[in-house]
Image 1 (tube, rainbow, N blue to C red):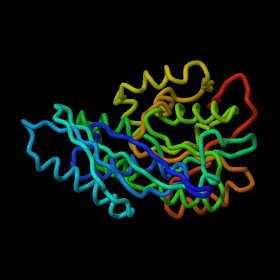
Image 2 (spheres, helix red, strand yellow):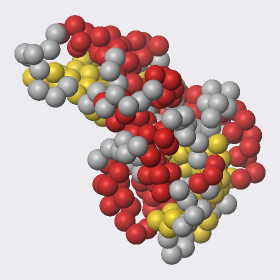
Image 3 (cartoon, helix red, strand yellow):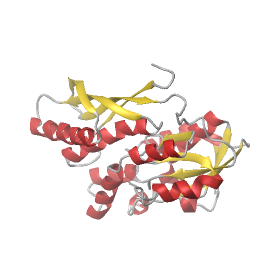
Image 4 (cartoon, rainbow, N blue to C red):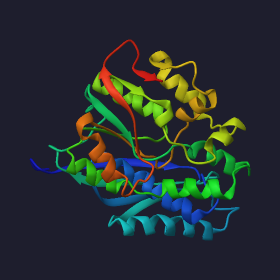
Length: 292
């Protein structure tokens, strides 16, 4: 729009992943807004996308979903300007979000460089926990931690992106940790090395994985990255499944020169207690992702 002003636009909606409709609305809102924050942008408006059956469900459920989403939009000074609803047997909800950004200070998945450290701002495991919720296998404490993780906004990371002039960033959502790391490595023409022992998990997620609480994306995400990933033979196969686990309102992957990584991590931990340096960027090798 000007030399120092550009628009960022994104859209995301999905089926319920928690039982409480208010929490579902809140998570859906943050999941959508996070795409703007992941670039270092500022969200300003949102339009709701709603699929809900005309018959068979009480409309108070939809009211709570909308109320939850609006609470998050309001808290983050994002104006709800409209939306669209469709009669559909399967509930789906989300937003199209518009934000603004300085085009000279955009973080993208093409911005990683050899010598950078990789930081992940949140633990992983929301996908398998969502399956555990649907099958009534997830403990209350595990569900609570998963919801709290999803409801931690990405705006603090966006502020850090601007302060530290981070050039390489992406959010970790449906394609899982390895899928989004693969996209970053491909776009940046580098290899990303991940230390499996440093990737933090939501408490209880590994146990649910061992119990078979996987999503359908476990298979599709493996197919997505194909043979571009090298996995050390000694890694627990159930841990590997979590690396392919789709996330909702997940953390950000940030690439920053190693000499600045600890300072950035220290600042991130003021709002993301379980953020961690999980690996490094090297020159492009025979594999796009190497997990040790």
